[in-house]
Amino acid sequence: MSTVQPISWRERLQAYYYLCRFDKPIGTELVFWPTMWALWIASDGYPDLKMFVVMTLGVLFMRAAGCAINDFADRKVDGHVARTKQRPLATGIIRPIEAIWVFLALVAASAALLLFLPIETFYWSFGALFLAFIYPFMKRYTHLPQVFLGAAFSWAIPMAYTATGQAPDLTCWLLYFGNLAWTVAYDTQYAITDREYDLKIGVKSTAILFNRFDIPIISTLQLSSLLLIGMALYIENLLFPWGIIGLVVVAVDFIYQWTKTKNRDPQLCFWAFRHNRWVGLIIFLAILAAFRF
Image 1 (cartoon, rainbow, N blue to C red):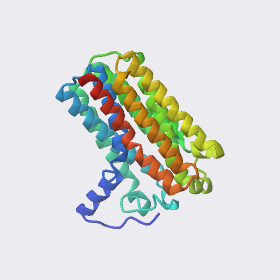
Image 2 (tube, rainbow, N blue to C red):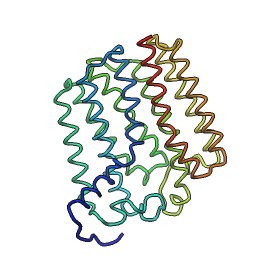
Image 3 (cartoon, rainbow, N blue to C red):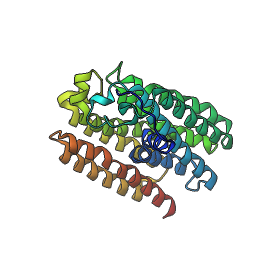
């Protein structure tokens, strides 16, 4: 890593912007849509505006916080990976301690939002903070960091339930584990992109663990996510017809992803990862339609 050079305040703010990945909203979208699934279902299709704004800002702040702590954890390896070598900490434009301060500031901003939510949501927020903090370090110790990411990305689902005054029930946990399975699937697609570099630098991932079974396991996880989410929609009487239509469209999309990634081309696997932004949106639109029509 290069030595930190003096920079202007504008350059520093720009570096913080890139550190938080505000220029790459895909991660925020992947957390936002499942949060909206839970918020709409827990609110019987009519969440109030305050709850929507608070949950949206919470997703934005915590995803950015996760990016900051992730880059801190990866600051010594990002420079060896083609896709990440231009990140602010990898280039040395900002110092590691600055990433910690950005992380803490974003966590504080997220904590301030809890003042507008029930006390139960405050208790559940400790799980979100714990998962957001430990996930980036898991790739050093286990081949399952994608599972920890899935747990972190899905934690907003029970928080949405408690925010609306509902106790997390069977529907909530079906959505949680359905989203977790989907997250592991698309983050394994992402990990295939970096597998060559990760093997060289000793970073672990499900892409390495699954090896030649990676694509079949991704498809199995995608199917599992559809079944779990479908069960949740069935319990809430949201499956017929709109839930079915949405899940069938998603299934077709998953098949399309398989046709693109079956040869494990890194660029196409990265494309498939990014394409998952539409999966969350499609399921949300199906839930919205089921409540409205």
